[in-house]
Length: 401
Image (cartoon, rainbow, N blue to C red; front, side):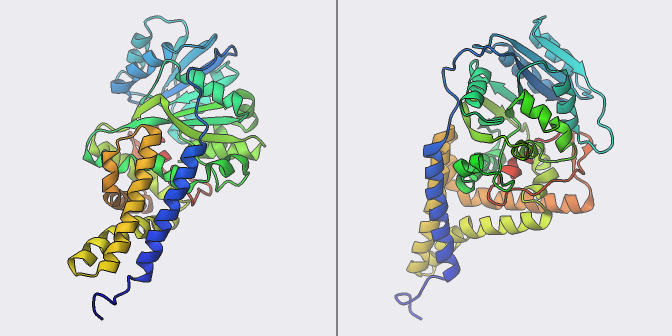
């Protein structure tokens, strides 16, 4: 067949159109996000900020200082739970507080059988908290002075049981720049955010444990973190539990209220993703199918476009260019909405390919029982995860404190 009469493969045309539709959905989500109010009103009710920490010496000081520098809060307590750290995390947390009476640093017992580390640490902190609102913050997250108050204000204004403002992600190294921007992009692209807030369906759920605020009454009604004791994706598990007790969760952009630096080295990133990315779609098989779908939507068009142009198959090249451009446009929309780096969007096919490779590593480690994080085996289960979002894939990156 001559190049003038050739037809682009049906799979390529479907992928390009699918990527375009997904990007249109991203635009709708971005336009409808409920963001924390900045500046926030003064929060008069007591607020407990709870920080599970295990071997977080390089990060805990900045986290604690930022929390104690919070404004617009009439009644604040900060409790750091030292979960068996061996690097002086507890001492550094106390030093960061400089005797501030609002700060307590508690030593936590190891998790008992049936518990993963982070859910256990959060459960113990939740038991000690006196606030009407509980705000769980990862030790690698730094809140803005107004960040906690703005998060609580949105929790109350939206009348939800759980509020998850997704912090701005900070990246170190080429691999992180490839993979980390997919975290916000995934839920903004594939999760119908408005419907997810209203729907009781567990499959329409996303959350991020880096910054997570809950109404204390709802939290205790659902059973606290005991409800997700062995859940690798405990933050999504909590959001599902909120739905089960009749309340609503809300995930939104939190780039104006907090930032997070998840990994210091490429090795840390690989270990973080590999330990539980296999659970991002509910099972190892589901993850492989989901990653195959992403590769079809976002890698196939780029490859086909290059090959088509090289061989003079211009319709194939045009469809490939359409699919590639749609993927990049979705990333640019996400970066603009979440204060992410826009230049990395042009490498979107490589980003998806890298994520797929990490998923394969994760599936292999789960099958072999070799997934670990900070010296602990990660063998917990998960409930059904959202097939429409890679939210679980992120949340799969920092589950042990």
